[in-house]
Image (cartoon, rainbow, N blue to C red; front, side):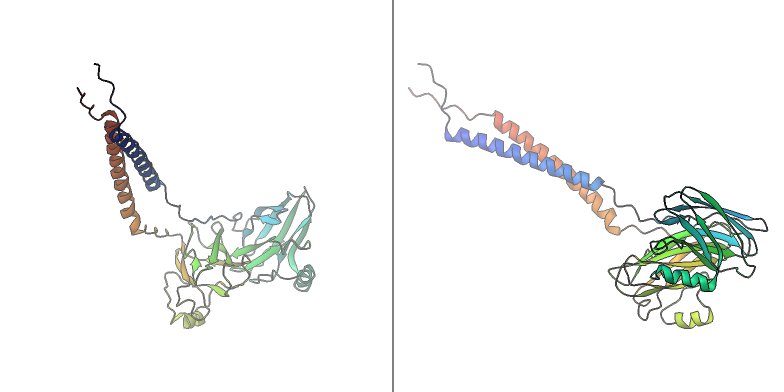
Length: 353
């Protein structure tokens, strides 16, 4: 009698179930290896950078020409200009927006205007103190603002604003920084205080400069709810301590010391002139803040030290790659075993006579 095919015994079913389980496990391990390998190759976040720029340059005895665009943001572009004491300043104003703006330069040196002033209070300030120039520019038109910078204005900063109601309060202001001779391009930087602790973010600022003196404008804002100051050490390569900074500032007043408001997002400007290349320390003068770590360094005309990479990065990434390779090998081995197990049938039962 012909021997009938062997029946699907429980043993054969177990082999098939084992084959499927090994195949599924192999696929899971291969997927895990792929994910780990991808994670190890994902680039880390780029270091935060801060842009620098500035207004037109000029100097000597020639007329200083500058171009400023007035926008409906509202804002001046650029918001920082450089002038030379005793020279004629000629500013070409272009209104690119749909609203009228003014270009009004305060005659009061080193006096940032109060951002919380009403339009009436702002107008009263200029009525009482005067301005170097006050030009109204209609939408889509251009105009020239021409004025002479006083000979005794060297080293000072003068704010310019738009007097149209609420444009200044919305951010339409800038600064004219005056030097005593030919200068390098102005530099604008951004600084913030930490919302999580007593620290400046970043704690290192870089200003590229090859010609001195150079004017620097730093927009400082507060991310926390505690009041701070941003105070610059006026001498290069001087490293103060919490124990000596008070007496140092008494002998060498800070060229820029501003109170940082507690209103989150509100900006104050620190405007100053740096006479030579070097490293300049800045700090918070509120008692206890400097000692807690609230200080930083401004690198002018010298390279900013490279940030040290976290030591764990060099260790974890090779381990991730090695782990991914091991998982990949295990997955391939399980897949091979599963394929072999699925192909080898259990022995047929012996025929019974």
